[in-house]
Length: 151
Image (tube, rainbow, N blue to C red):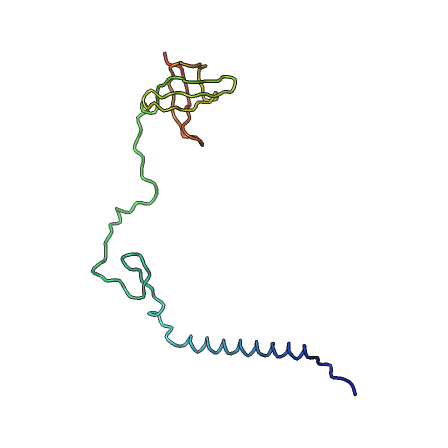
């Protein structure tokens, strides 16, 4: 007589497969049983209280806050027009290296040091020259642009 073709590991794998099928069927039946119970609209609703927290009870109508539609602003607030004379500043060149192409201007109003690059010059400048310029915010700070010598 011949030996059986089934080995121990084959029997174990078959047992595991059957166990998985059985567990899966039990879970399916359990889900179906619970799905029929209490699945109404009230159980699915969630409310937000006056503090912004999610709760299962409706909020107190006495604590309700009304907001006018006109008070809600979407987007950026409108900028007020800026006077052109405020944009143009005056100052003195404290340092300018023509070979490197940059320098600094000391603003006469705020006493701040503002970076200036040779590409933003309208006239040739040197140290101790009085200049007029506009300020732009660059990556590393304030930059002077449109730099002209003052008379």
